[in-house]
Image (cartoon, rainbow, N blue to C red; front, side, top):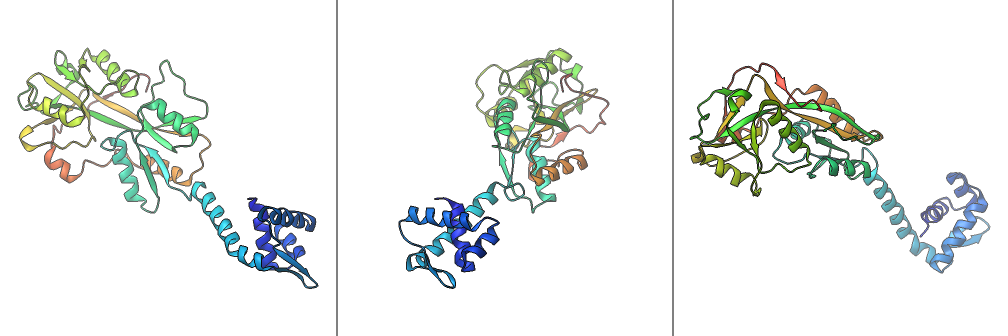
Length: 324
């Protein structure tokens, strides 16, 4: 059904005259007549009766009027659902337990009036495709520029750098260390089964291993976080890397240790990726929030009770890949 014709029908019903409806709609009276004629052909009945005073609704016209108003209200709701500022800001945070999700929670606390839709896409390629298609408004990613060019319509800005920590079980040789340096980790096995070749996080840890001569293994199936923590807790030789803001909870008997890495501190470079033409006002608010924030909120208190961070030494220098 032609909604312009429906809009014209409602305007005539309200005004009572074809000419007054034409003036309201900024079209000619001839155009009004054509729209009404087309609508009457579509519904198969006469909607107006001409009178000396103008136009009166027929019985069928009066029956059709409330439904016509419903159609126009539905049209307005449909447009509002996708109009910037009237729909939720959709943001990809990679994983709900990772630092970008913590930062977005902080943004929500600061601006609770802004509606958010949080999604988790697999990798940077999927995120860029979703941004270009309009499926999401923005994504937090580590953008690897080496050997890869982003489309010209994609804009990237550094959001924050997240320090990387060593996670060990209580029997590991480094479990009692207050802090460690990258040099201290040479010869130790770092196990990260979640590293998927071709992803931005695999590129980051490949660069980290190459820069400091580390042994980072990704062999074996990735069964998820809990089985990884179970293995690390019971191992004397395996450790893993986690982001400082990664939310982790484990049974108390695991006695896992989060150990700060210093001199230099490897940091994971999170960037905000968006489309250059995206004008959603909440996206501008998020960018302002990122500019005011230095780091995401610390882990929640309930997490902190279970996952105490070991080491309080001040950071001396940071490292991030050359492509970041």
